[in-house]
Amino acid sequence: MQIPLLVGKTLLLVDDRPENLLSLEALLEGSGAIIQKAFSGNEALKFLYRNAAATACVLLDVQMPEMSGYETAALLRQLPATAAIPVLFVTAKEEGAARVDAPYDALLTEPVFLHKPLSAPRLFAALERVLQQKA
Image (cartoon, rainbow, N blue to C red; front, side):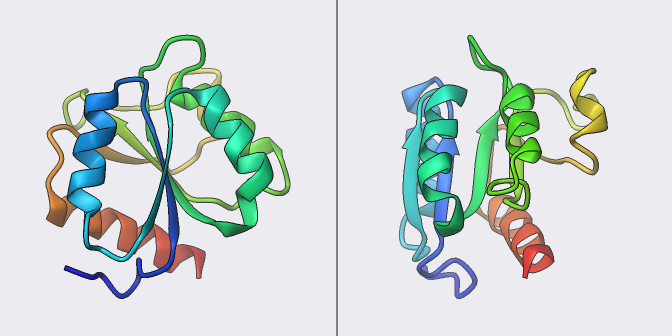
């Protein structure tokens, strides 16, 4: 089902586990969004350095090796080209237990968390909220 707000918008999905990327991609299938994937924070940063203007939102796993989702998002906030790109944090932590770890909490104010297991209605509602705020 196409989601008017997502049609033609590029979403970057970032997770070190291919099965999680596949799950997210399946939820977004048919939405009209252009899906890009990265398997690490470093890959995400490289993609966004080249494609910041075309990227509407980043769906970012919180727990990844080498560079956490929080560290990745904090680096994005520090660069003018990527600072305004909305980030949705995807986490397995229970609702209410998810919060940004120090020292990243000062840079990542008002984080939006998506809790696993994800559902299409929750995913689309969160995307709609952050994309409308960006507009």
